[in-house]
Length: 303
Ligand SMILES: [Zn+2]
Ligand SMILES: [Zn+2]
Image (cartoon, rainbow, N blue to C red):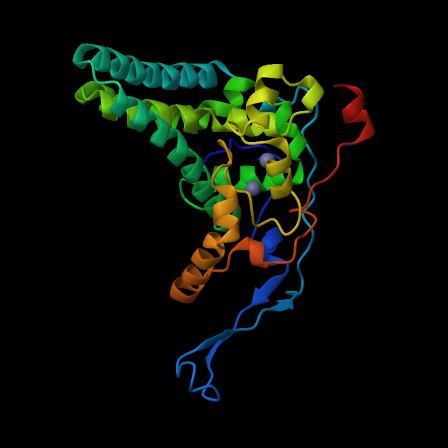
């Protein structure tokens, strides 16, 4: 899942300023010969909070109303239009192909699977960039910084203009879906690709709606959230509260309970730690850069 740079101009990071380096959990992996009956190679995991010295809090401010970083540009609009076109072509080819072959069940099933997997994909991607890398990471650096900014000022996503919010995903969708549109004439594949890529592209809009106030959202959006077809405000709200390690999915949120209950991401984090030695940010004690900074009175007043 992708989120556009929220406050690149605000977040200045160096290794010393990196908020998730301020406190770390040191995890020790040792063998326990005192318990040979269970397993001679059983691993014990003993987290300890450690505060690295000489780390300074970064100075950052939320974007103001009408901040240029929240506005759509013609480049943003062009990419969103291109992404929407590729998705619509895919869906149109699926419908035309199904109509021509009189086979509707398989494309409809494929579209449904695409919708379900888009939610899972949004969760995996969101978990990855919430937890690993930083602003200097190739390709994903802007996304990682954007998510960090979003966690500090989650309400700004509701001020972000539509194309500004979606253009990065639209660009990715256009890049992958256009070749499929050009070479594939299988309505089942077209249905899967169209629905899945469409849900992924609009996931940022679903995400923005999950941050909206019920009274200000279109009634149809509230209804879709309430029946679970779009990620609900309460479910995504839990992602922005401690311990900041759950409810990563932002399309429908249908995978969140399963992933969190079965500690799927925690298992992946352990596997990555023991394999590569990298710690996820969710193991660190939350800092002020990670936790939400409430909206100031003046910002509320200008809404
Ligand atoms: Zn997040
Ligand atoms: Zn959010």
